[in-house]
Amino acid sequence: MRYDSDEARHVGYACAALSVIILASRVLISRWRREPFDLSFLFVVLSIVVIVGRIITNNFYLQFGTANDALHDTQFPDDKDANCLKIGSILVLLARVLLTAALWLQICLLLLFYSRITSGITWADRLTKGAWVAVVLTFVAVVLATFLECRPIDLYWQVDPDPGYCVRAYAQLLIQGISNIVIDLLLLFIAYPLICLRKRSVSEYVSLYTLFALGTFCIVITIIRVVLIFNEDSSQTTRSVWASVQMFVSCFVANAPTIYGSLRVARRKRSDPRSAPEYASGEPLSRPSRLERESWMKMDEEIALQPTTHGVQHNPTQPLPTRVSHDNNIDPVLASYLTPIQDERSKRRINPDE
Image (tube, rainbow, N blue to C red; front, side):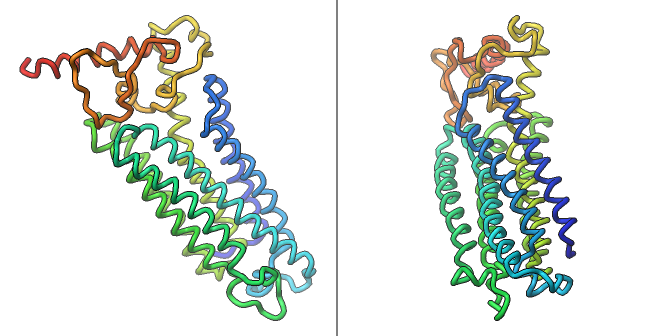
């Protein structure tokens, strides 16, 4: 399906607005909970800047047009000024870099999320390190393909004579799409211990499989985008529409688990009758621990806040096998609530015949 420039612009505005709302919500929740500044916070802020930059660039190149559309779109007006086409074609290159940056920043956010909740698992840690290397290498590869597919670079805005197929940027599209799919699959492999290493309740399995389904949905959207762009002869409006959709879906998938986890922990503290007075107003007076910020299911909170009992051997494959001390870094209300559960499990390990 071929879109006109107005449709592409409206879809771009809508997807960018939704993406910024998601990212801004994560920032506001983080500040409300007084979480420390970390790498994920930096990635979120950069994502907002990149998405805003892309939508501005997107608006102008759709207005000016590109050499690719002038050559291959039969509905493209013939009276477009050559300088406008040149500016539009240059802005397309910039928009493609910004789109790649936005998508890869969401991958980084997901990678941080998965790596933290699976820390302590040797093979998951190795996959995580490999994924970081893949993220860097694939990003460089996509950026190079963006600028080097047409050589010399001025072929991107050349109309006469016909510069050939390089202006359609099929190689850049394939490299970007395949890289995105491969990294998404790698992220799913990293998250696999969440399912296989512990027995969980039905509701927890539903949450986990929903997370996996969202990751799979990102892959499906990428495939649909690539197929449709090829079917429409790399129409720039089609590329713009589906790039916007993919950006929004990636943004939602990368940030929904963290936003949900933060709200869940905050709601749990407010609803617990044994909550400390400082949480009665809904505004925490001390910074939450890293474990609290990243735990998003009941089972993971129990693991994260599990105390070490003398003489008890813990399972080394448990996610986040961290000792807990009842200090200011760990919420004592949540820790005391979970301690009886863990003490009971410890007794069962000590006396397995009971």
